[in-house]
Image (cartoon, one colour):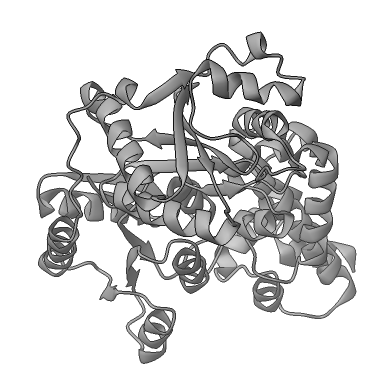
Length: 404
Protein backbone atom coordinates (compact mmCIF):
# COMPACT_ATOMS: atom_id res chain seq x y z
CA UNK A 1 0.00 0.00 0.00
CA UNK A 2 1.00 3.64 -0.59
CA UNK A 3 -0.15 5.36 2.58
CA UNK A 4 -0.83 9.11 2.59
CA UNK A 5 -1.33 11.32 5.65
CA UNK A 6 -3.18 14.63 5.18
CA UNK A 7 -2.59 17.18 7.96
CA UNK A 8 -4.78 20.30 7.97
CA UNK A 9 -7.20 21.79 10.51
CA UNK A 10 -9.66 22.74 7.76
CA UNK A 11 -12.06 19.84 7.19
CA UNK A 12 -12.94 21.07 3.69
CA UNK A 13 -9.31 21.18 2.59
CA UNK A 14 -8.72 17.70 3.99
CA UNK A 15 -11.75 16.40 2.09
CA UNK A 16 -10.57 18.11 -1.11
CA UNK A 17 -7.03 16.71 -0.84
CA UNK A 18 -8.41 13.28 0.03
CA UNK A 19 -10.61 13.20 -3.07
CA UNK A 20 -7.62 14.14 -5.26
CA UNK A 21 -5.33 11.51 -3.74
CA UNK A 22 -7.91 8.77 -4.28
CA UNK A 23 -7.56 9.32 -8.02
CA UNK A 24 -3.79 8.67 -7.99
CA UNK A 25 -4.27 4.94 -8.61
CA UNK A 26 -4.78 1.62 -6.88
CA UNK A 27 -3.11 0.70 -3.63
CA UNK A 28 -3.57 4.11 -1.99
CA UNK A 29 -4.76 4.46 1.63
CA UNK A 30 -5.42 7.89 3.17
CA UNK A 31 -5.26 8.98 6.82
CA UNK A 32 -6.06 12.38 8.30
CA UNK A 33 -4.96 14.62 11.18
CA UNK A 34 -6.10 18.08 12.29
CA UNK A 35 -2.91 19.12 14.12
CA UNK A 36 0.66 18.05 14.84
CA UNK A 37 -0.20 15.79 17.79
CA UNK A 38 -2.73 13.81 15.75
CA UNK A 39 -0.24 13.66 12.89
CA UNK A 40 2.50 12.22 15.10
CA UNK A 41 0.06 9.65 16.49
CA UNK A 42 -0.91 8.57 12.97
CA UNK A 43 2.76 8.30 12.01
CA UNK A 44 3.37 6.03 15.00
CA UNK A 45 0.41 3.79 14.17
CA UNK A 46 0.86 3.51 10.41
CA UNK A 47 3.74 3.27 7.95
CA UNK A 48 3.25 6.45 5.90
CA UNK A 49 4.95 7.03 2.55
CA UNK A 50 3.66 10.58 1.83
CA UNK A 51 2.60 13.38 4.17
CA UNK A 52 0.69 16.39 2.80
CA UNK A 53 0.65 19.07 5.51
CA UNK A 54 -0.39 22.66 5.99
CA UNK A 55 2.36 25.19 6.71
CA UNK A 56 0.26 26.75 9.49
CA UNK A 57 -1.17 24.29 12.02
CA UNK A 58 -3.11 25.42 15.11
CA UNK A 59 -0.65 23.96 17.63
CA UNK A 60 2.66 24.16 15.77
CA UNK A 61 4.26 25.68 12.69
CA UNK A 62 4.23 23.22 9.82
CA UNK A 63 7.99 23.68 9.43
CA UNK A 64 8.49 22.58 13.06
CA UNK A 65 6.46 19.44 12.40
CA UNK A 66 8.39 18.98 9.14
CA UNK A 67 11.69 19.01 11.09
CA UNK A 68 10.39 16.37 13.51
CA UNK A 69 9.02 14.20 10.71
CA UNK A 70 12.25 14.30 8.71
CA UNK A 71 14.30 13.47 11.81
CA UNK A 72 12.05 10.59 12.87
CA UNK A 73 11.03 9.25 9.45
CA UNK A 74 13.83 10.16 7.06
CA UNK A 75 12.44 8.36 4.00
CA UNK A 76 8.99 9.93 4.27
CA UNK A 77 8.04 12.30 1.41
CA UNK A 78 6.42 15.61 2.41
CA UNK A 79 4.40 18.09 0.37
CA UNK A 80 3.73 21.42 2.11
CA UNK A 81 0.49 23.34 1.54
CA UNK A 82 0.07 27.05 2.23
CA UNK A 83 -1.98 30.08 1.28
CA UNK A 84 1.21 32.10 1.75
CA UNK A 85 3.00 32.27 -1.58
CA UNK A 86 5.83 34.47 -0.30
CA UNK A 87 9.41 33.51 -1.03
CA UNK A 88 10.11 33.16 2.70
CA UNK A 89 7.40 30.52 3.17
CA UNK A 90 8.69 28.49 0.23
CA UNK A 91 12.31 28.91 1.35
CA UNK A 92 11.55 27.67 4.87
CA UNK A 93 9.77 24.60 3.53
CA UNK A 94 12.68 23.54 1.36
CA UNK A 95 15.25 24.53 3.99
CA UNK A 96 13.78 21.77 6.19
CA UNK A 97 13.79 19.25 3.31
CA UNK A 98 10.20 19.38 2.10
CA UNK A 99 9.93 17.41 -1.14
CA UNK A 100 7.46 19.81 -2.74
CA UNK A 101 5.30 22.88 -2.12
CA UNK A 102 1.78 23.71 -3.36
CA UNK A 103 -0.12 26.96 -2.88
CA UNK A 104 -3.71 27.10 -1.66
CA UNK A 105 -6.30 26.91 -3.06
CA UNK A 106 -4.96 23.51 -4.11
CA UNK A 107 -4.86 22.99 -7.87
CA UNK A 108 -6.29 19.52 -8.51
CA UNK A 109 -4.13 18.58 -11.49
CA UNK A 110 -0.92 19.86 -9.89
CA UNK A 111 -1.40 17.84 -6.68
CA UNK A 112 -2.68 14.77 -8.53
CA UNK A 113 0.40 14.74 -10.78
CA UNK A 114 2.78 15.01 -7.82
CA UNK A 115 1.02 12.27 -5.84
CA UNK A 116 0.84 10.01 -8.89
CA UNK A 117 4.57 10.41 -9.60
CA UNK A 118 5.53 9.72 -5.96
CA UNK A 119 3.26 6.66 -5.90
CA UNK A 120 4.80 5.32 -9.12
CA UNK A 121 8.36 5.81 -7.84
CA UNK A 122 7.45 4.10 -4.58
CA UNK A 123 6.04 0.97 -6.24
CA UNK A 124 8.87 0.82 -8.80
CA UNK A 125 11.44 1.04 -6.01
CA UNK A 126 9.97 -1.71 -3.86
CA UNK A 127 12.19 -4.65 -3.04
CA UNK A 128 9.77 -7.48 -3.66
CA UNK A 129 9.45 -10.09 -0.94
CA UNK A 130 9.58 -13.52 -2.54
CA UNK A 131 7.94 -15.83 -0.04
CA UNK A 132 9.62 -19.19 0.59
CA UNK A 133 7.61 -22.37 0.04
CA UNK A 134 8.57 -23.69 3.47
CA UNK A 135 6.20 -23.10 6.39
CA UNK A 136 7.65 -21.33 9.42
CA UNK A 137 7.15 -24.55 11.41
CA UNK A 138 9.95 -26.13 9.35
CA UNK A 139 12.43 -23.58 10.71
CA UNK A 140 11.58 -24.02 14.36
CA UNK A 141 13.78 -26.01 16.73
CA UNK A 142 11.10 -26.00 19.43
CA UNK A 143 8.18 -24.02 20.83
CA UNK A 144 8.39 -21.67 23.78
CA UNK A 145 4.77 -22.23 24.75
CA UNK A 146 5.94 -24.48 27.57
CA UNK A 147 7.65 -21.37 28.99
CA UNK A 148 10.62 -23.52 30.01
CA UNK A 149 8.81 -24.58 33.16
CA UNK A 150 9.81 -28.20 32.64
CA UNK A 151 13.45 -27.18 32.47
CA UNK A 152 13.61 -25.27 35.72
CA UNK A 153 13.76 -21.69 34.42
CA UNK A 154 15.03 -20.43 37.79
CA UNK A 155 18.07 -22.70 37.66
CA UNK A 156 20.50 -21.20 35.17
CA UNK A 157 22.77 -24.25 35.22
CA UNK A 158 20.03 -26.24 33.53
CA UNK A 159 20.26 -24.42 30.19
CA UNK A 160 22.35 -27.45 29.16
CA UNK A 161 19.21 -29.56 29.46
CA UNK A 162 17.58 -27.32 26.87
CA UNK A 163 20.49 -27.87 24.51
CA UNK A 164 20.54 -31.63 25.04
CA UNK A 165 16.75 -32.04 24.89
CA UNK A 166 16.52 -30.44 21.45
CA UNK A 167 19.88 -31.63 20.13
CA UNK A 168 21.12 -28.08 19.57
CA UNK A 169 24.61 -27.66 18.19
CA UNK A 170 25.82 -24.89 20.50
CA UNK A 171 25.65 -23.86 24.11
CA UNK A 172 24.13 -20.67 25.50
CA UNK A 173 27.23 -19.00 26.90
CA UNK A 174 27.20 -16.05 24.49
CA UNK A 175 24.75 -14.31 22.18
CA UNK A 176 21.36 -12.58 22.19
CA UNK A 177 17.69 -13.54 22.34
CA UNK A 178 15.49 -11.62 19.92
CA UNK A 179 11.70 -11.55 19.44
CA UNK A 180 10.34 -10.18 16.15
CA UNK A 181 6.73 -9.33 15.33
CA UNK A 182 5.38 -8.41 11.89
CA UNK A 183 2.39 -6.08 11.62
CA UNK A 184 0.06 -4.90 8.87
CA UNK A 185 -0.04 -8.21 7.03
CA UNK A 186 -3.05 -7.98 4.69
CA UNK A 187 -2.79 -11.53 3.41
CA UNK A 188 -3.53 -13.64 6.51
CA UNK A 189 -3.15 -16.85 4.55
CA UNK A 190 0.50 -16.04 3.84
CA UNK A 191 1.36 -14.77 7.33
CA UNK A 192 3.46 -17.77 8.29
CA UNK A 193 5.34 -17.56 4.97
CA UNK A 194 6.29 -13.95 5.72
CA UNK A 195 7.79 -15.26 8.93
CA UNK A 196 9.56 -17.93 6.85
CA UNK A 197 11.03 -15.13 4.72
CA UNK A 198 12.10 -13.38 7.95
CA UNK A 199 13.81 -16.57 9.16
CA UNK A 200 15.62 -16.95 5.83
CA UNK A 201 16.85 -13.34 6.00
CA UNK A 202 18.08 -13.75 9.57
CA UNK A 203 19.97 -16.91 8.57
CA UNK A 204 21.53 -15.05 5.63
CA UNK A 205 22.30 -11.74 7.35
CA UNK A 206 23.68 -13.45 10.46
CA UNK A 207 25.59 -16.14 8.56
CA UNK A 208 28.51 -17.38 10.59
CA UNK A 209 26.45 -17.32 13.80
CA UNK A 210 24.72 -20.38 15.23
CA UNK A 211 20.97 -19.67 15.17
CA UNK A 212 17.95 -21.34 16.72
CA UNK A 213 14.35 -20.34 15.87
CA UNK A 214 11.36 -20.63 18.19
CA UNK A 215 7.83 -19.21 18.10
CA UNK A 216 6.25 -17.59 21.13
CA UNK A 217 3.25 -15.28 21.61
CA UNK A 218 2.81 -14.57 17.92
CA UNK A 219 6.46 -13.58 17.54
CA UNK A 220 9.37 -15.30 15.89
CA UNK A 221 11.97 -15.70 18.61
CA UNK A 222 15.58 -16.47 17.77
CA UNK A 223 18.73 -17.14 19.74
CA UNK A 224 21.82 -15.88 17.91
CA UNK A 225 24.96 -17.42 19.33
CA UNK A 226 28.29 -15.62 18.96
CA UNK A 227 30.08 -12.35 19.66
CA UNK A 228 27.51 -9.57 19.13
CA UNK A 229 27.27 -5.85 19.82
CA UNK A 230 24.37 -3.42 19.64
CA UNK A 231 25.59 -1.73 16.45
CA UNK A 232 25.75 -5.03 14.60
CA UNK A 233 22.29 -6.08 15.79
CA UNK A 234 20.69 -2.75 14.86
CA UNK A 235 22.40 -2.62 11.48
CA UNK A 236 21.43 -6.10 10.31
CA UNK A 237 17.91 -6.06 11.70
CA UNK A 238 17.54 -2.55 10.28
CA UNK A 239 18.26 -3.79 6.76
CA UNK A 240 15.63 -6.51 7.08
CA UNK A 241 13.11 -4.07 8.58
CA UNK A 242 13.55 -1.61 5.72
CA UNK A 243 12.47 -4.27 3.20
CA UNK A 244 9.32 -5.09 5.18
CA UNK A 245 8.58 -1.37 5.65
CA UNK A 246 8.89 -0.70 1.93
CA UNK A 247 6.18 -3.32 1.45
CA UNK A 248 3.91 -1.70 4.06
CA UNK A 249 4.71 -4.22 6.81
CA UNK A 250 5.95 -3.13 10.22
CA UNK A 251 8.66 -5.08 12.01
CA UNK A 252 9.12 -4.74 15.77
CA UNK A 253 12.32 -6.21 17.19
CA UNK A 254 13.06 -6.78 20.88
CA UNK A 255 16.59 -7.81 21.80
CA UNK A 256 17.26 -8.88 25.38
CA UNK A 257 20.43 -7.93 27.16
CA UNK A 258 23.19 -9.91 25.54
CA UNK A 259 24.14 -12.92 27.63
CA UNK A 260 27.58 -14.34 28.21
CA UNK A 261 29.40 -16.12 31.00
CA UNK A 262 28.08 -13.56 33.50
CA UNK A 263 24.55 -13.09 32.14
CA UNK A 264 23.21 -16.54 31.34
CA UNK A 265 20.37 -17.65 29.18
CA UNK A 266 17.41 -17.66 31.57
CA UNK A 267 17.91 -14.14 32.99
CA UNK A 268 18.21 -12.87 29.42
CA UNK A 269 15.07 -14.79 28.47
CA UNK A 270 13.16 -13.28 31.42
CA UNK A 271 14.28 -9.82 30.28
CA UNK A 272 12.85 -10.57 26.85
CA UNK A 273 9.51 -11.62 28.39
CA UNK A 274 9.41 -8.35 30.37
CA UNK A 275 10.04 -6.37 27.18
CA UNK A 276 7.22 -8.19 25.37
CA UNK A 277 4.81 -7.56 28.26
CA UNK A 278 5.69 -3.85 28.12
CA UNK A 279 5.75 -3.64 24.32
CA UNK A 280 3.60 -0.49 24.33
CA UNK A 281 6.43 1.37 26.07
CA UNK A 282 8.52 1.04 22.93
CA UNK A 283 5.90 1.21 20.18
CA UNK A 284 5.63 -0.56 16.87
CA UNK A 285 8.19 -0.81 14.09
CA UNK A 286 11.13 -0.19 16.41
CA UNK A 287 14.37 -2.04 17.14
CA UNK A 288 14.76 -2.09 20.91
CA UNK A 289 17.92 -3.37 22.58
CA UNK A 290 17.44 -3.72 26.31
CA UNK A 291 19.78 -1.95 28.67
CA UNK A 292 18.34 -3.99 31.52
CA UNK A 293 17.00 -0.90 33.26
CA UNK A 294 13.42 -0.68 32.05
CA UNK A 295 11.99 -2.48 35.06
CA UNK A 296 13.35 0.23 37.38
CA UNK A 297 11.23 2.92 35.78
CA UNK A 298 7.98 3.78 37.48
CA UNK A 299 5.04 5.48 35.86
CA UNK A 300 4.87 8.10 38.60
CA UNK A 301 8.52 9.06 38.20
CA UNK A 302 8.16 9.26 34.41
CA UNK A 303 5.11 11.49 34.60
CA UNK A 304 6.71 13.79 37.17
CA UNK A 305 9.77 14.20 34.98
CA UNK A 306 7.53 14.88 31.98
CA UNK A 307 5.62 17.56 33.90
CA UNK A 308 8.82 19.28 34.98
CA UNK A 309 10.08 19.25 31.41
CA UNK A 310 6.84 20.81 30.12
CA UNK A 311 6.83 23.51 32.79
CA UNK A 312 10.47 24.39 32.17
CA UNK A 313 10.03 24.43 28.38
CA UNK A 314 6.75 26.35 28.26
CA UNK A 315 8.33 29.03 26.01
CA UNK A 316 9.83 26.47 23.64
CA UNK A 317 8.36 24.55 20.74
CA UNK A 318 8.10 20.86 21.66
CA UNK A 319 5.86 17.89 21.13
CA UNK A 320 4.95 14.59 22.75
CA UNK A 321 7.75 13.02 20.68
CA UNK A 322 10.36 15.45 22.08
CA UNK A 323 9.36 14.75 25.69
CA UNK A 324 9.29 10.99 25.09
CA UNK A 325 12.78 11.15 23.56
CA UNK A 326 13.99 13.10 26.59
CA UNK A 327 12.61 10.37 28.87
CA UNK A 328 13.85 7.53 26.67
CA UNK A 329 10.41 5.96 26.12
CA UNK A 330 7.93 5.67 23.28
CA UNK A 331 5.45 8.55 22.66
CA UNK A 332 2.40 6.28 22.78
CA UNK A 333 3.49 4.84 26.12
CA UNK A 334 4.06 8.34 27.56
CA UNK A 335 0.63 9.42 26.34
CA UNK A 336 -1.03 6.44 28.03
CA UNK A 337 0.72 6.62 31.42
CA UNK A 338 0.33 10.40 31.54
CA UNK A 339 -3.44 10.10 31.12
CA UNK A 340 -3.59 7.33 33.73
CA UNK A 341 -1.58 9.31 36.29
CA UNK A 342 -2.99 12.81 35.74
CA UNK A 343 -6.52 12.13 34.52
CA UNK A 344 -6.00 14.43 31.52
CA UNK A 345 -4.30 14.01 28.17
CA UNK A 346 -0.71 15.10 27.64
CA UNK A 347 -1.77 17.80 25.17
CA UNK A 348 -4.36 19.15 27.63
CA UNK A 349 -1.71 19.47 30.34
CA UNK A 350 0.58 21.35 27.94
CA UNK A 351 -2.31 23.67 27.10
CA UNK A 352 -3.03 24.16 30.84
CA UNK A 353 0.57 25.24 31.42
CA UNK A 354 0.54 27.62 28.49
CA UNK A 355 -2.77 29.19 29.57
CA UNK A 356 -1.49 29.64 33.14
CA UNK A 357 1.57 31.38 31.76
CA UNK A 358 -0.56 33.49 29.40
CA UNK A 359 -2.62 34.66 32.37
CA UNK A 360 0.55 35.60 34.27
CA UNK A 361 1.93 37.54 31.29
CA UNK A 362 -1.35 39.45 30.90
CA UNK A 363 -1.25 40.46 34.57
CA UNK A 364 2.45 41.21 34.95
CA UNK A 365 3.59 42.57 31.56
CA UNK A 366 2.45 45.03 28.89
CA UNK A 367 3.02 42.59 26.05
CA UNK A 368 0.50 42.74 23.19
CA UNK A 369 -1.86 39.80 22.78
CA UNK A 370 -0.19 38.66 19.56
CA UNK A 371 3.24 38.84 21.26
CA UNK A 372 2.06 36.63 24.14
CA UNK A 373 0.60 34.18 21.63
CA UNK A 374 3.90 34.02 19.69
CA UNK A 375 5.92 33.73 22.90
CA UNK A 376 3.91 30.62 23.79
CA UNK A 377 4.22 29.29 20.21
CA UNK A 378 0.64 29.95 19.11
CA UNK A 379 1.19 31.26 15.60
CA UNK A 380 -2.50 31.87 14.98
CA UNK A 381 -3.55 34.68 17.36
CA UNK A 382 -7.23 33.96 16.74
CA UNK A 383 -6.72 30.34 17.79
CA UNK A 384 -4.90 31.49 20.94
CA UNK A 385 -7.77 33.86 21.83
CA UNK A 386 -10.35 31.08 21.35
CA UNK A 387 -8.42 28.71 23.62
CA UNK A 388 -7.95 31.39 26.30
CA UNK A 389 -11.67 32.22 26.25
CA UNK A 390 -12.52 28.52 26.53
CA UNK A 391 -10.39 28.34 29.69
CA UNK A 392 -11.35 31.57 31.42
CA UNK A 393 -14.68 32.58 29.88
CA UNK A 394 -13.36 35.92 28.61
CA UNK A 395 -10.94 37.07 25.93
CA UNK A 396 -7.34 38.00 26.88
CA UNK A 397 -8.15 41.70 26.48
CA UNK A 398 -11.22 41.43 28.69
CA UNK A 399 -9.21 39.51 31.29
CA UNK A 400 -6.51 42.20 31.36
CA UNK A 401 -9.02 45.04 31.58
CA UNK A 402 -10.96 43.41 34.41
CA UNK A 403 -7.74 43.03 36.41
CA UNK A 404 -6.66 46.67 36.15
